[in-house]
Image 1 (spheres, one colour):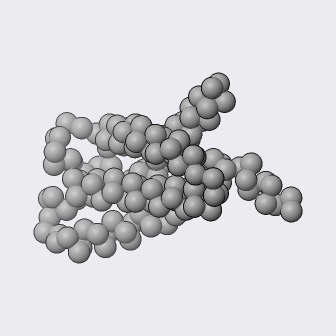
Image 2 (image 1 turned 135 degrees about the vertical axis):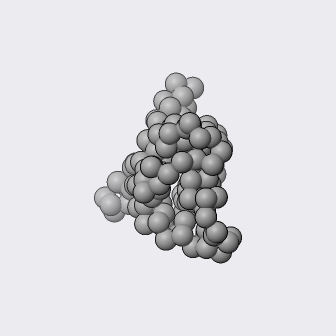
Length: 143
């Protein structure tokens, strides 16, 4: 039981940190833009609470995915969840802080979000999963 709580806490902390970094890395150019939903909210405020909310959801999903025996399926599912979740939040921030003040269409919003967030999402998702599955990575390297 202690091991499960320790792993869950480690997972939650790592997801929160990586989500926060990912948001600032990919959407940091919008830090000076005003939010259309909350004129007084800072970018830090949005990033903090988005990271917190993502952490709660992703940690529960990751703990459930850990019940899967096959490691490749487990890691692939986590990879997809991280990338989809992070892209969704980046898209939300882009719409809130940039496109709501302009004339973007849906295709333009998705393209701009993908353009600014693809590399940060891929790199940080890989780092997150490598750290979470460090024991698996090390055992593969030893072979």
